[in-house]
Image 1 (cartoon, rainbow, N blue to C red):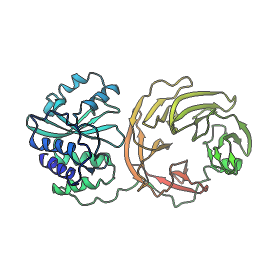
Image 2: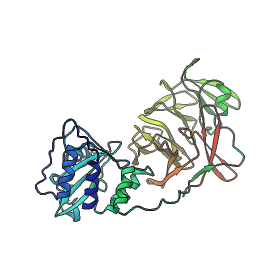
Image 3: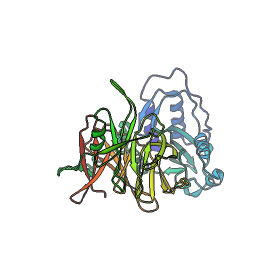
Image 4: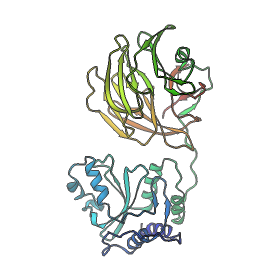
Length: 413
């Protein structure tokens, strides 16, 4: 690990320019190994940009500090008995000595911090979880270069950090490019199902539209989203049944992002923001109730009793469905994604990889969400919008801005 840190230090110093103002060095280095001392000095006095993918070290004006601040943020996020946990969280179950740490940089979302810890003469890289810490993930000790690369490869999800690969090669750990993974989403070449927004377009010939799955009695809720023109178009909702329609009072929001039918009931869930309120509308009475205050983009039922939402654009939360107020979530998985679509018992979470469009798939196991990995897809759009079954195949669809639909067969691992 010392060799890895020495190479990382050389990457920090490769730019011969110096920052206008060196960073203050607020780490006690008297007992630190020479490689750590050199790393800290490089952080303080160099002009640098080191791309490790999710972790990107770049010159800043803040002081060079320990991981104390990251641990304080984890405590503020709800971690109980931090001191008790640190008493045995160090290498080999020894205490985690916060004073003998060096913070390198946070990840791209500010959810975790990469750093260095030295104890008993050994040096380890470490990742501290700040956003959603648990006893299992608060401190991830990385004792070997192999463990470090394996962890970053997993968190980078295929993204290539150019300096991460350089670091790997200088250590003689460069590996051949793996074969492309087999995607669980492939273009459907069979007969296409009906267009997922056909009823919505029949109701609203202009503008961007949305459509819910049918209720038990066959009612479909359709929406025309807000458009600022030209021509400007207001939000409109309607209920269609066998070609007839009636207006439906909206959810009281500026726009609508997704519609979801409630299994076994004549009701629809309306997602009103990114994030915004999740509102239920009774199709018979028009009565409305707000279920959750901040749901991102969409939601859906994993089965008749479990609703999953993209909570506050930070995590997938699963709720046991109730006709009364929803209680606390029964499962929660932090995610760094753009939006979700739910169908066939799966969550299709759109990743933030804009070079290779892909979805992270998760499957409900009755108690939690199993991560089925990230799957590329031949898709230029931003989201999925519909689902169907055809000849025994489970299908999902994307609709572009010109109303063109693309169907994909789903074969999850």
